[in-house]
Length: 180
Ligand code: XMP
Ligand code: MG
Image (tube, rainbow, N blue to C red; front, side):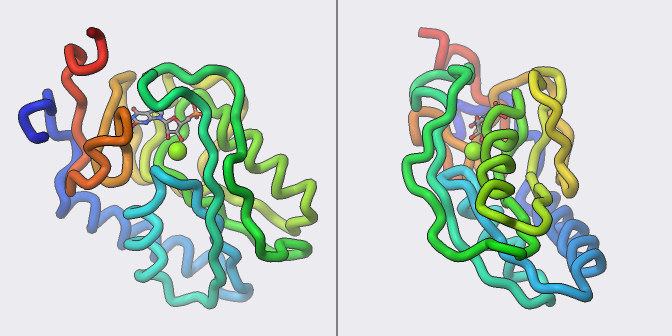
């Protein structure tokens, strides 16, 4: 697995430190209200688990499964598919979407609209990574860990062909892995 990585961008320690910073900000901003955290699987799984356990505010949580591109593709298809919707009530609640990365913005744009339609009082976004160079839609991550260059990255939940998700670090996947 490690031999398929061209460069490590963020180590386990750097990710841990970033999660603590994000949690401090979120605890501060939500000190007067509860959070409904909605994670977008599968990419969010480790980030969500680590971040939410650092928070001191009261929260409830649920997940959605959303895909925006074929598992063996590295470019978004332009459409999203909700494969599993969340099931808790978000009406008049303060929702925080937890997602691995904002890339073109397609996924988070649609998920945010979806939550607003279900009556959420507020919807904010928390992402581990932001790849601003490919943004097509006007999506801003309210709480973002790291800004990354236009490279395909894996690890810490992010996967290619559903592999590499369990790497403890985030690294650039060697292009020859997906260019064949
Ligand atoms: P957008 O913002 O384009 O992002 O809707 C859609 C989803 O694409 C995935 N994504 C990546 N996954 N390495 C990955 O492993 C990447 O560099 C990358 N860029 C985008 C991610 O799941 C995101 O939710
Ligand atoms: Mg994702």
